Image (tube, rainbow, N blue to C red; front, side):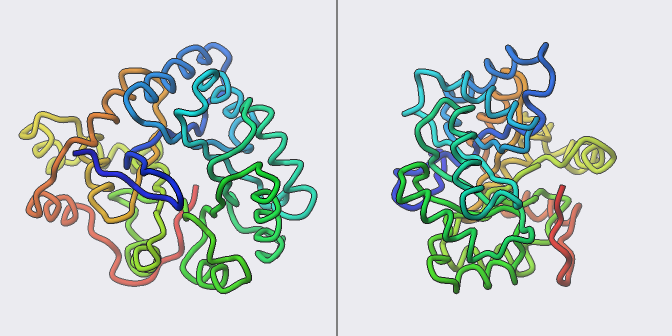
Length: 283
């Protein structure tokens, strides 16, 4: 059975969604990106994550086109720049995102990262957006353990629905304190860049001998192993970006992969977690 993640007041979402970072940047890829998102919805990857930052609204326009006529099937997430995350600027930023997304509301609106605007002002703006019906719930992204503890003791701060952070097998720093704390709070963690960014780190993951051997034995792709490892953690969902239908199908199939304790141990031995507190990784 496909594992689900439960946000407040929703019936549960598959533990793998769809990310859109780098979408909307090249006109020639627009049709493929729209088709990929639509294929993901068809396959049950109904959470779509985007942001006003991505292609300066271009990704939101791609999502808006992809969900036209299907809004009720989708759990829609977007993120606000930190310098827009307070007062009337937050209201205007949200309204601009909604216009690009061709939607009347967001299921979840996130502070993209912490900036100079006090968290109290961001919480107040998020609560105002909820009261106006423009968002159903709100959360944060790229906030570390101390930030989260500061946030959740503020008036209204306990309503934070999620924290979206960088997390993959080769970047396990959140396991020291942030992830256990979120699990204790029953707060879902959304893992972005779950397959690592392009470059040597991603190459090291995809080409690691132990992972390649395990993937071959199980008849799956290494990328699917990495997604399966992530969502084996309580309260963690992954939001990989896939610009093609083939990649979306591969991501969706990862939900059905079961890893044994022995297999998880092999993977974690290959890429061990730091044994101490490390700064929150961000890209």
